[in-house]
Length: 136
Image 1 (tube, rainbow, N blue to C red):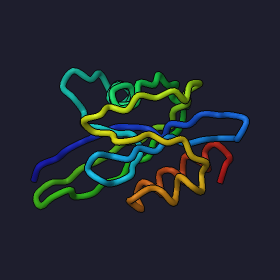
Image 2 (image 1 turned 90 degrees about the vertical axis):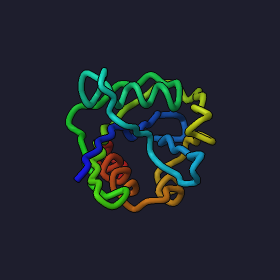
Image 3 (image 1 turned 90 degrees about the horizontal axis):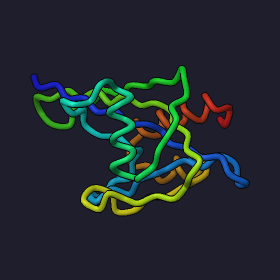
Image 4 (image 1 turned 60 degrees about the vertical axis):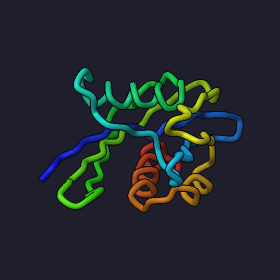
């Protein structure tokens, strides 16, 4: 059995419109939350999430204490994968997508973000994050 691990975050920003969540339209066709594989030089899960967010979006973020959600699935036969999500705030909504992986980045209110996501597991993580923020 192969084991893989990724880390990422539900990234949000507060604006005059309320809380907006960052959603990624991926080059592979699905719509997701920011995440990526743990690399050997990463210090910890937060380091992985911070690096992936910067690579995929060009955003700097602050992680909120107390939020950590893990989803487990099998991306292919013989592989088990954990994805650890944190909750991260940013003051900027100016993004630059990592073209090799991300086709487009969108800031959406909760209901539109939930509707946009491809996978139910991502919707569950987003709902948990919104609940932690008092939004759901």
